[in-house]
Image 1 (cartoon, rainbow, N blue to C red):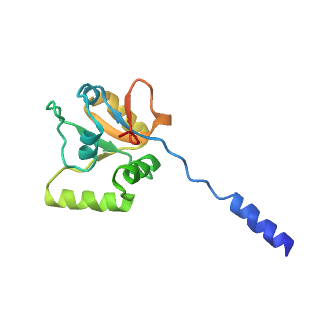
Image 2: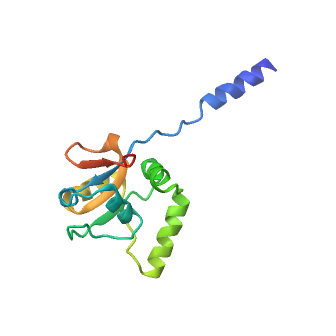
Image 3: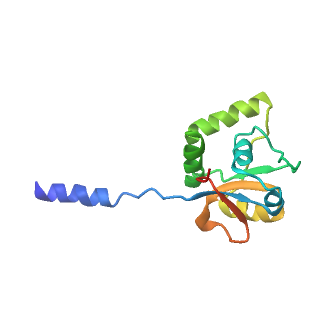
Length: 140
């Protein structure tokens, strides 16, 4: 009996621990120059507006695979799950209200930010070069 309990505990300890993300909006140089605030970034993330207050056309770029930082940002800012976010974008796209975010792997997203200065994404701040402007999803 004792061996079985020990085996179960060891098995539980071996389970992967969810990553603790520190989500940030990452802005390409042109998007950073537009002096975007969190409200403008929220509107971009939900497909409400793709133009900054200064008239800069913005592009939302997101990794297609599991994005812990985006999930945490959605939860913090909108109390929204990833599934609800994906359903939201399906509805917005089918209505023709907005073009869905471009999807690239994380390395591709960072490269895209360098070559497309008006691009914006949500990533964990740990993997973002300091040369790119970051705005925390947790700020108010």
